[in-house]
Length: 264
Image 1 (cartoon, one colour):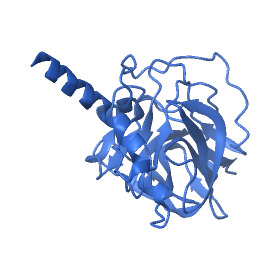
Image 2 (cartoon, rainbow, N blue to C red):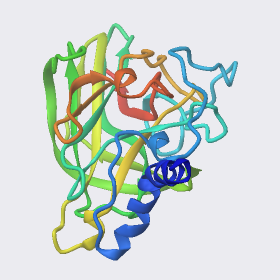
Image 3 (cartoon, helix red, strand yellow):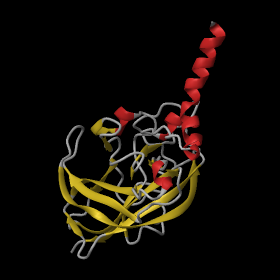
């Protein structure tokens, strides 16, 4: 009897892996809201304190130009490395991570572009080549706030050269039509969600994308508000929920950015 129970426990632990492998065999993979759910040994539980990996901040990454804000790179060696589902695919529809940022300039910002860095699972591309995006204000747990601007735009899907959980990371970036979105000083939330909704593309039935977390590594611009990111997904059963209530591991800050200029 004890041997049977052990076998059952082992089988349950392997379900996420089997789901992903079986995706190529016409078996629906098991979708998860955060990446560290798919590994057998969970990382050390994270906290809301971002680890100070750098004492000075470098210039903005090349893909954030002109750059106003960048949350920072994922750190694959961090104990609480993680990624949260951020996607609209045939496997996981309309699941969004809303990343906070602060406009400190009294003149405000004119936003001309947005991006998120996402780990791709099952398919290293997007189809169609577009992303949904939004900028909102007044968001909180259970509260969608007010949408300032949103839409669907052509998107680039560019490898960052980073990798975590055996998955490659890509920058999903959109440009806003001119003139850009004007933002006064204050706190806002951005989203950029990769798409894979082509019913003729079998990859879209197994693809998942996860926005990378960060521990303040190589961040640029105003610090990202810690522990304020929200997660919304009818598929997973979350209604504008603080990501720390979804999974406490690596929920402090995320790899996303804002492009534009100081308004005059």
